[in-house]
Image 1 (cartoon, rainbow over the protein chains, first blue to last red):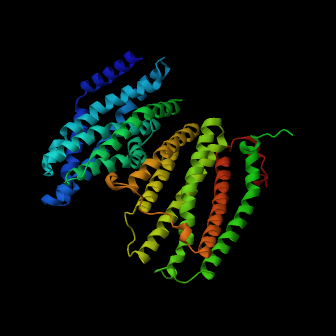
Image 2: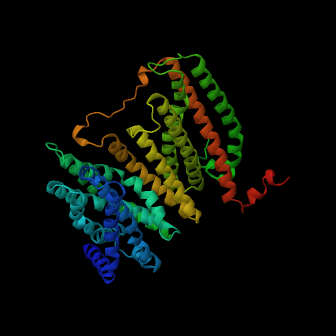
Image 3: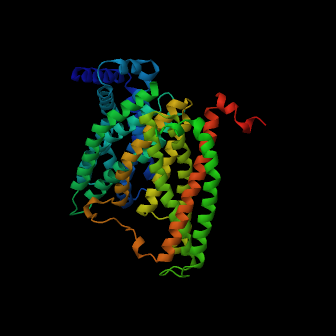
Length: 223
Length: 247
């Protein structure tokens, strides 16, 4: 079972490496959205610091929902996904491997590029560290919750917009605590531990439950 | 006596039953809403603490807000029954409930905005309860959007049912996040229910109006279910034999 997991993980990563431009598309979307806000609102120092946490997270939510479209759709269109459901390996394992590959390709790059945002928004070094930590904990939740919606909307017309409509309300807890942690880190004497613990709890819950829900959704969609 | 529990889970049997129940629920709805509003407008004080007459929007506001939340639970319950027993009618009930639930959520938000303008001086405030209701509206709309995006009836029923279940699992977490955005100081939630402090006449009027709204929901849901049944079963022989279509 573990070998099948690794096999699918490697396959998805390899396929993505053959078309590297798509990884960069999501990444640059994130950067572009983030650099639009100072232009639209104000370039004033203090205000930028205040809006940075929310802006980073909203941009991360949008970037990850855009990327969701690609999670299953290629495999669905050429029939690979159907074959995967027929293999003796249980479908949630397959799905988990695909989710992790998807996060490595779309979530992790956002985490790694996020210090740049810190520079754009004049964040202190402490907050940049916190931002990387909460993005590291939060973005996997986005990929995993999003996978359910991506599986439900397989092969539908206008699937991309529909996915956003379905998952964005579900992302609210991650947004609230992810942005909250970054804001709190800028205040002297407040602990960010509760935020980190809550986000870790979300991640663990998502790892446990979302592969099953996604597998059920895939079965409904390719029935 | 042997009871056939699944008799009315067949659309063929449920359709005439619903037809008979609808007038009953309409009568109850109109009578209860009329009574509740009469009680609320003429048997209660003109001033409630610092609020004048305008507090009387509470009867419509609370009734629709309660129904909006309750109908979400009902919708998920029907979706779950549908997934477990694979009965077509349950999915039809779920999708009919979703629309009435959305309408109730919109009424609650609109009356809340009007009340907010008169008592707080603003149409909208990012207060936890308001935000929760806005999110409830988004969840309802997501359900309806998914259902109407899928052409295949079987897939659309099951997919939206699964979405409703996922939504139900996440609603407590979302509710907590909205109520307690700062876990460092979150001993109590902001707004506590103040039902026990409400004057009994107001409470009675509120409960009667809510019952009326409930009956209204029954009536509209059953009407919508009948339409959905006819739409989906239009090619069956029992529909073609209905006397509505044979005049």
